Length: 324
Ligand code: SAM
Ligand code: SF4
Image (cartoon, rainbow, N blue to C red):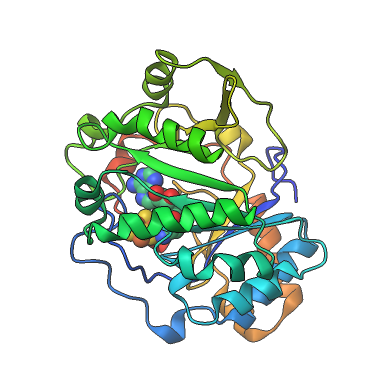
């Protein structure tokens, strides 16, 4: 699918639940988010119909996300069915890693080809502060990551950088990346929860790269058709790679190749646009032609560029509802 700006849209981020077993402070308010009624969440059959239609129209990569996707009952069977869609080139999953330990081999057998594990601190007390959950979770997540690496699934760790909270850990994450030969992606913190002091919290991708380059030499990696918005580098002489994702300071709208579908079936062609189209009614009507036309309309209406701006910092949209 090509949008009106000539961008090839080949990547779908599909959220399968709004529920989560963590309460990360950059993602949802302390009291959590009012759960969506079960009957309003797309069934796996509806998700599969959506995915098959999207793939027929040109989607090549699907990333399953949440909330926390691994908390949804039946997720492994669903992933396997998704992976079996013939023209789908890449099935990926984003998880907070808390349940990875138990599920990693099932995920691999189901056909998940890449895992992104969100982890913001390697220090138990900081992990506890950011995720508003027990420090013991950190050990479980790290065990899950090690098992995943051992299983042969490529793993990326996603780390949201926040000044004064975890920005002193950049080099610790790099050492972990070196030890496990994996990728760490540092993400600029997006103030999506009307966070008054967000300016003091955001660490720019530029600053992150500078901090790394004081210790390491970085070799830029070439970009592939499905690599998304990260700028990736190899830590010279090692098998570790790092990336920076810069939604706040360096806009990448001109390269945006994605659409997002929430667990209640709302499709967004731009993270920072309020515009959403309700797919649930179309999916529940079973009218596949109407579904195709709606998806094509979503892509053709994708805004040319809607970068992060001041007013976006005051719009409130918990990421757990959108899937990141
Ligand atoms: N629960 C899963 C997880 O944490 O990986 C999947 C859903 S989570 C919403 C997807 C991604 O969004 C995570 O990598 C998370 O770090 C990122 N995210 C959430 N809120 C964010 C924010 N305010 N700024 C930057 N990234 C954010
Ligand atoms: Fe849950 Fe992921 Fe949001 Fe953390 S970032 S609260 S793990 S959905």
